[in-house]
Amino acid sequence: MDDCLKRLERRFLNMYPLKLLSPDVLESEGIEVCDELYENLCNLLSNQKEQDTVFKHYILDDTSSTCISLKESRNIISQGTTGLHSWQAAQALADWCVSHSEELRDKEILELGSGVGLTGITTVLCCELQSYSFSDCHAAVLSTLCENVLLNLSTPNEKDCHRFVDNVTKTMDNTLLRIKHKNTDVAVMNLPWADVTKNTVPEVDFVLAADVVYDTSTFTELCQALKNLLHYQKTVAIIACTVRDQNTLQQFLLTLAQYEIKIVQIDVPSSRPTHFLLPQDVLVNIYRLQSSGQ
Image (cartoon, rainbow, N blue to C red; front, side):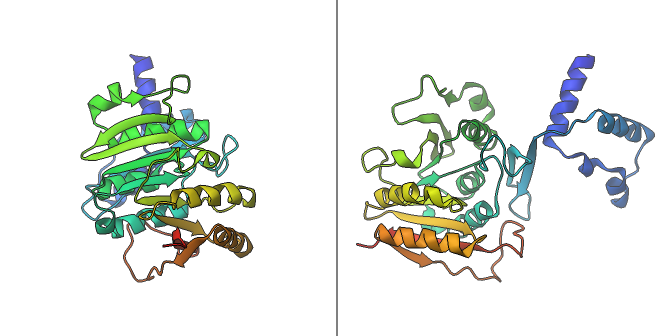
């Protein structure tokens, strides 16, 4: 019994920050706190170990009916990648998708560099899509991404018998997971940008990407992948970029232009309500990309 309780305590601590159970918080809400809670809280705090993995929770509307829980790293860089941590551009892109749900209705979407899945999970929950394909290429990121997709988009039965394919037996198109959320087909793909060609990736309506513009050494592969995806006449790419270094961003835009990609910066009114508490001191630019031949 003690072992079961300890496992339950660990699971509870992973899912819910202890600060939410603070007696000060409870008392400020007029809730009487019994002595047993103080005692057990002290025990939990004394036994808690600092962990690299946490859960973040996002409530997307005033009625609290839509909540996203994401497993991610508390560290900006973990296991040699930044993809295990959610970023501001992912929130901004998710907010854009929710605000343009009519434009995305019944569309097929591919996301590049999905990370822990915030943009895609939000979009699948809030928009009526035909399909949504998450993609990344880092093994640890893909594992966490699959967990988050299952946690937020699958039914209890699917969590036990979902169609997950490991690295040994993965499919020809590198699809690791396939589920259905309501009427939306959802997939997670192992998709390095160098593997994106006109023959390997099917035609989609929208390509999404958030916070993929930070390392200049990746620009050639990323822009070539975007060019191949935008080869189809109907395809549009929406890219959200956190503006950390103007020179890096300008180099990316110049590289895009060399690949004959038309770039239009989307004007996002500052007064427009958002679904996330976006930091006011962080600038995120959103760009709409199409083949310059369109």
